[in-house]
Length: 272
Image 1 (spheres, helix red, strand yellow):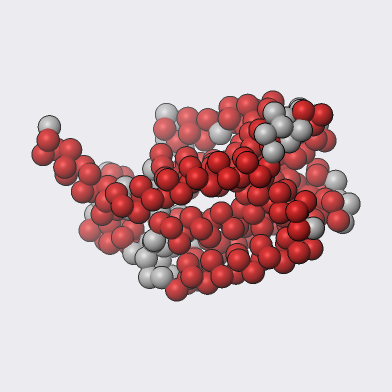
Image 2 (spheres, helix red, strand yellow):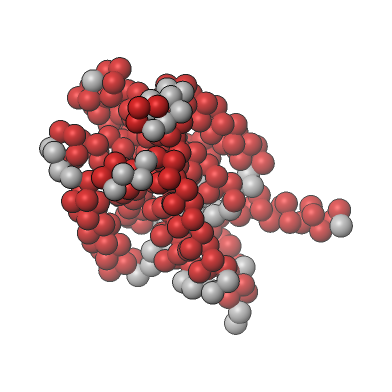
């Protein structure tokens, strides 16, 4: 049986309908990159306004509340899911920054640490569930593995982006351009070379973090640090407005759900 037939079989469609995560569409990648940028600048803004300890504690409380809400719903709900992602982004940035700023761990070391941690999580997830597909996130245990993985990818991406911008001295703009090029690699590997969809997805997912964070930092930080100096507060607010607009559209249109995409395709065929 062809892959497309397997993907569209009644069993597969039912499983995706029960999934706690959105369908992987262009909207998914756009909002994901936006949340990475917002997480970076919001973390910096809160740390400077509230102090690192208070900021981390406050972000941790909101993150716990948003994840608790995400775990209580039975299916994917756009605003609940993306609120949790935003808070993972903010807290994940803070976690990576604490490792470097407070503990004094070089970005190279923290990047290597998070790579090993992510590999270990993937190994445990696969050993337990025999799959790493986000389309299989239909049970509490798989959802727990998913969110632990997401948290680690954000911390890894933050450390990697800071390493290229600061340690390697590329600067934020050059780092952003580099990651924009790199993220095309898994896209080409999947789209043209038909490489494994799960592996290419997670590679791209990790790269969205330094991609969005690098450009957000470039817009927010001072000119002395190689930025545009718009300020982390204004950049965070602007990104929040755009994210809310996208999530509002997805909530109404359901274009990032199985049912919504099938309805859009059916409507397109009728109008053709």
